[in-house]
Length: 296
Image 1 (cartoon, one colour):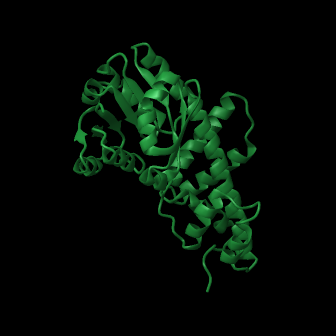
Image 2 (image 1 turned 135 degrees about the vertical axis):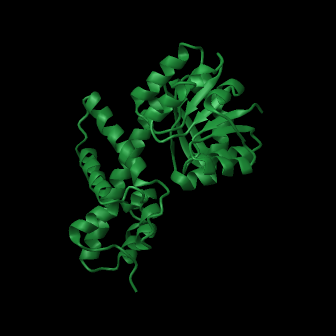
Image 3 (image 1 turned 120 degrees about the horizontal axis):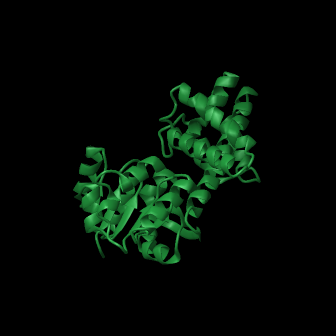
């Protein structure tokens, strides 16, 4: 197996890189966080600059917080694109806007380099377990070339369509997940204020139509007051901002998601950006002056 470049060793990227190493992939990695680089190097990776990764690797995965960072890595001074050879493939697994993905695709196409936008769903637990859902946009041949790596990183990978399609699918995912967390939060704050046992409410409804993966993932954490991030609010805040901007650009009204963005803004002001996105419930708890938690 050829050497793979991996850029971005954050809450998601670090376990993803380690899973590739465990599977026997040779990884040349980098991140601004040197502690993360040392940790992944201890697991078997080599360290290299963007330019070195471009020169030595025909396939590169990027996993960073924003499209602006992706573009800087690719096209900044001594960036990845300065040394990438024709025929190479860049796979951006970050959550960015479709416009940013298409811009990267077109610029790299001009120098003969393929580009796949392949954001993921599953949060840190999915990254650690190698069970991410991968949604890709780009050309079939580039998707096929990435499939061996997708199979290590996730439990499913699907090519949605042309460049930018994967980023659209991720924004759809984020609309549903974050609005569902908000609705679940509102409902359980209602239960708490009404004075009933919230854990028993959860057990009563989870097997019915109100049951969902979001309900099962978040309510047990909330009841324990565990807001250690699997998917931090700051990342979801950025994703929902991307939703709002993209929706406005294509003339799609999004009243629920626009209100959700303001909820996330309030949580930002109150210092909750580092909390898991289950911490959205804290907005509704502030409004009702009550906490959702386990009861004796």
